[in-house]
Length: 178
Image (cartoon, rainbow, N blue to C red; front, top):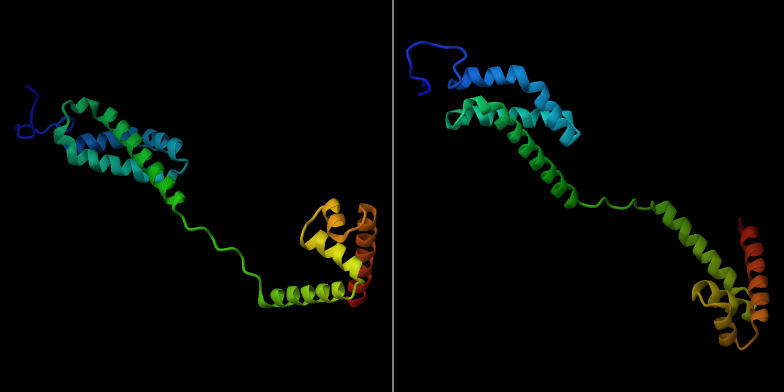
């Protein structure tokens, strides 16, 4: 029958004495357990915390160990399990992390865009009717040349011509305002 903590003589290497046994395991195996956890977690600070928690839990349950000689095996399993828990927690935290708000444009930027938009609309209004139709149908309604030709009642060549002349006139007007 193995000795119990209530025996008379004090033995510093008594495998049934939690303080001494855990201290000995800590001094002999702490670095390798931290490496194990760090390889799983890719974070040394978290790995150290996992290993410390495993040692604390083991100390509190030392009296429940069936075979105190298996303390290292128990610690390794505890470190792996706790590392898995940290990884699961990270995944949940990452999954439910609020999405960052998109950068908002400044009021100045909005005013500039509005001014440019108004200038483009004013320039389009100044185009001859057929050029204006071709530009609006192509760039605002996003129709193909064939669809524009049907809508305007003209050939695809005429659509190309009206679009090209309209874009040249817009460019000239808008560059002149800059």
